[in-house]
Each structure stands twice: as structure tokens, then as C-alpha cells.
Image 1 (cartoon, rainbow, N blue to C red):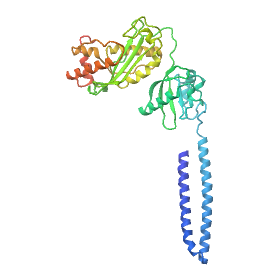
Image 2: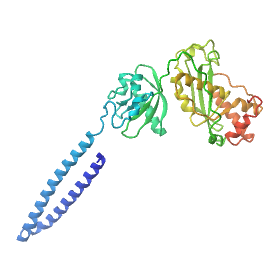
Image 3: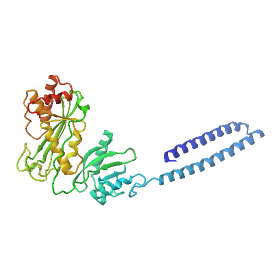
Length: 379
């Protein structure tokens, strides 16, 4: 029997005993009026014996239920129990992906060997999580995960002053939080060819009404010499409606200084910025469940896919996409992308082009995609 079951049974038994005692007291009160006669002495004595027996049963049952509850509680795995037998799957020990479970009290409840290799012994079960990760940032991430109702991707500052990408999942009341870290990238002598993106995906996104479809205008700036990402950003739209406050712009340190400025991004601007694996999570979140719209969007997504492969991060999932340059050419408008590295001008251009496409008869995302494919420059 679990602790909640014991608690309910105890409350029910004690309530019954209290009701029985109250009934006896009521009977005794009626008998007090006959204290002056011989007939009232025997019943009153019986009531007194009954009350004494009830009190004895009450105390014994209370003690018994407390002992059972203590035994049930002691049988649960300790929060600091190393290895986590009983609730930590054995397969976690064999995972290459670092996984950490943090209790509601802010201590590490479980950590697989990969997590200990990544974060060090400060992540050992029983240690405060603040010893390896910024606890305030983790709490904010947990609140986001609870609000989203699922796993989120974010970047958490480490106690050593760095940053660590991580996926955060709230496991429910009393069960703690699971943190899943990307596999550290392997050290390789050479780099593989950029992965090929899947063909244009998800039919459901093509069937979305163009006036309300969730969209993310994407801007990616790359170093023309090394093909590495220097800046990336997104801004969200609902159809042609632009949400300027939902914009992200991230500068990226390519690891090797670019030879010259590109789209307003100078070598000095990216020198102290985050590397791609640490900058990617926030951009990834903004692309989730959205049609990706951009100038040269296929090339931009290909560059991102190559960076993910280079960093050993999970590959880019299939994304619906709409090339704004092709759409502009099909509509007879200026197909040149906006200047600079910020995403908001791309979002503004997307808003105008989507309005023009709807006036031209495009009712769904698929209609806009097919219209863009009619452009002279479309492949």
C-alpha cells in the first residue's frame, strides 16, 4: 500500500472511531438524567467502558498507521541515492547523451556517466545543481517548460562562466526536472560534406491558410570564405501579420576570424560571441512548427544543417519553406534581399510579399510556394 492509500485509510478509520465516540457521549448525556435511579448506573458504566475501549483503539490504530506510512516512505529511493536504482532506467548508463535529473529541492537526483564526464563531479547525485549550472536560469527554463507543456531547448550559464545548450523537461509535481545535453562533438581530422536537406515536407503546412499560417522569417549570414555562420536571426509572423517583438538576432563566433565584414558583421563583432552550438538553441525554438521564409532559404537551411553536423548536434528536422526572392520575382517585384544582418527587415519584406501573394489569389501556403516556383530564377 502506498503512502497516499495509507493516509486515506487512516483518516477513514479515525473518522469512524470519532463518530462512535460521539454516539456514546450522546447516549451518556441522556443517561445522566437517570443518575438518581438504579436503572441508570449499569448503562452509564457500559458507556464509560465503551469510551475507554474506543480511546485505546484510537491510539493503537493511529500508531499503527504512522508506522506503516514511515515504512512506505523509507522504501522510496533516496534523493541522493547514487545510480538511481528503482526509477533510473539501466539504459541511461549506456547513453552517449548526457542526462541529469534535478529534484525540486535543487539537488542532482541522478546523473548518467556521460553527464558526469561533461559536467564533472559537481554533477554527482546529491550535490546542489548550482555547483555546475546557474540555478536562477535553470528555474526560468523550468517555468518555460511547464508553460509549454513539454520539452524546451535553451542555453544555461555554467558555474564556470561558460554556456551549455540543454533540453529541459519538467517531469511533474514531485518528480523533478530532466536535463538532456547534446553529445559533445567528436574531434575529427576532416569535415564531412554538408547533409542534404529532406525534400519539401509536411503537407499539413502547405494546406495552412496563408492569412494565418505560422511563419518565421529567417536571416543567415555566412563567411563566404569558410562557409561558417556569422549571424542568424528570426522574426515571427502569422500570415502577413508581423510580430516585431518576437524577433531574435544572434551573432556567432565562427572559431576562425572572417577575412572581412559581411552584411555589416565585422570580425570584431563576432570575436567574443558564442560558438554555434551555444547560439543555436534559441533559433531552433523560433523555427519550431513554422513555415520558414527567407531569401535563398534553401541555401540558408543547408548552411545551418552543415553547422549542426559539424557540431555533432541533432540534424535539422524537415521544415516547410518559402523563398521570398523567388516569390518577389514571380510577382514582378524587387527580389533583392534587404541589407544588413538583422531578421526584422526580412520579416517586413515577407509581410509585404505575402499580402501581394494573397491579392494575386494565393489562399494557402502551398499556393504561395507554387507561385514562387513560377519565378524565372526558381530552379
